[in-house]
Length: 166
Image (cartoon, rainbow, N blue to C red; front, side, top):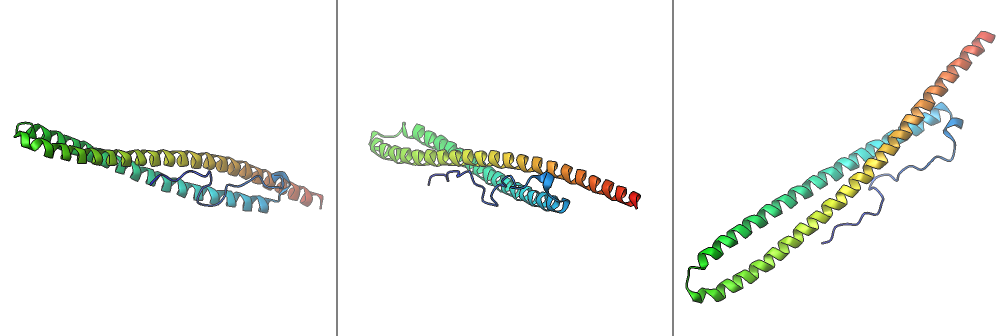
């Protein structure tokens, strides 16, 4: 089984696009809604990142386990071969058959290790992609929160000025 290819899309919500309306022309309420949506997106991306990291950890653990198993099998096979070298010549045909079977098994295990490595690499790419999306969303949230703060201050100033005129 080959590893899944990255399509560039996360499994959650689609990445936000630049809103059609400039944030400076949006009301504080609209900016709060937009900031909440971006905050929700950051939470979703964080959950996806954690899921991807967990999957990467599992793949790495599987990779390590398979590598240890392969090494143990190779060691055991080497020890068996050393013992057989001292036995009768009639066993040589049996050894050849066993070695051929073990070579097939080693190739199979090596293929499984290669697939696990490729899956790990895909998961790392996915993690990197999610980290970039989170950074972008965090930056957008920060800008919107600053804009909300500025607008609220302007609103308070205009309300204060309106009360002074009365």
